[in-house]
Image (cartoon, rainbow, N blue to C red; front, side):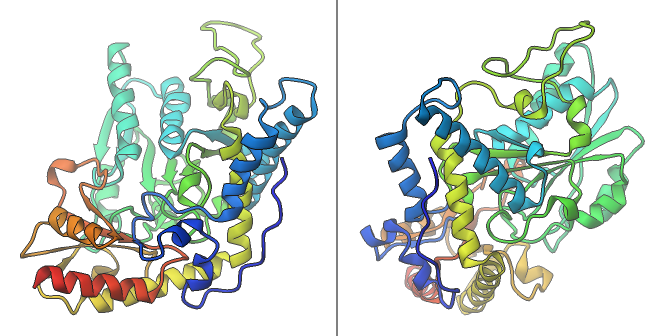
Length: 416
């Protein structure tokens, strides 16, 4: 199942020429979709992948000798090559999962369960997405039931929205084995300065990085980031739902063990000698793959390439600055840590805020009634008991300055 070429996309000026490639905006042209940190809309080229697969190519991958089965297998490996190029990795360092949450759990189970010893420590930020935190809490409980104790050591967010380096230094010890991080924060919308944190923790502490909010918005280069594990979802970069990526540095592959068995995965037998260990991909992938979703990654990457990732980043950064300017005219607004508090010249399309005179859920509901879709509530933060009630606006390539103006005027009317 090859990805058909799609009509070239002109460089972004205001997002309108990008919108025409997304059928959802044809069916609902009045909608303003500002919840892209949750999921992105799909271009026609991605939708075509699913249509072709289920109408003409539906076969399992590599489990038969007929042509469509071979083509399904080829489409998976083409997607693997495309993802590897997109994040500057080796193709053998890319495994497909069910999503970013599945990938982050795979790190805990495939690496953590077989490598952590009694007394080892994992550093985490309670204000990060729960998918980056809960897998380690779950692993801690499982290991405790097996008689092994690992410690989870929290560190904090700085007042401007990125990680507090001093807090990380204080949490670090000679028993620290891994630190769980986000590349772009899903609520605060700032670059979390992974390079600086690598310098702080040193080369021997593993970094598990959640790139869900940076992939498709800005360059994600695993060589420059120097993360040991990197996770993201396809559905947040225009691809289909139900597919995620786990990147793992090749030097760690021998230390990983399968945590699901079936299909191609080889079981791990305790005490076995001379065992033929599975390759990294076979350790993570098992059973029937989500073939059309995986294949849609190729179409999504092709679409991003035709727009140009630098153009997307510039456009989204410009929209962020415009959003700040326009929202600043509203009475009672309180901005969350992020682009406003850090004094950043732009941003990554994520801005969170609340109003002193109204509940965020009520405002989000009123906006939804006017076909403006934002997020409110806890935003899947691990420290939900301490979370502020923020409205989150998250933008992508197809959003426009007009979208921002429509929302601002709606908010002005709601608050009056």
